[in-house]
Length: 145
Image: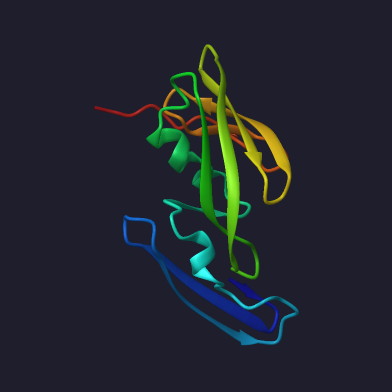
């Protein structure tokens, strides 16, 4: 990330068993917390969740089929805040609310920030609407061939 007079970088990796590694650096002057953080606090988390990025919410939803089948799942996520790129533990719940004619509605409850929103997903589990953050502008063109 870059801003006027500053930049930051975070490379976050996962070993597949719940352990995280991070390489982070910052340059310039910014009134932000340092990038990275105490990765022991996110030990056991299988997914990261990048702040202001609706696509990263899809990892646990797709892995557990919550866009297709009823269910409720709780997760510990390695949440990356923006723009400081700090890594924080975030308890999150995803609940299949209902199927729709074009996909499903899955409720997201983020204890870390107290956010609750009903995510509208298409039949592939891709975000169509994410309250206060994102809305699909148009469908992708039909594939040729």
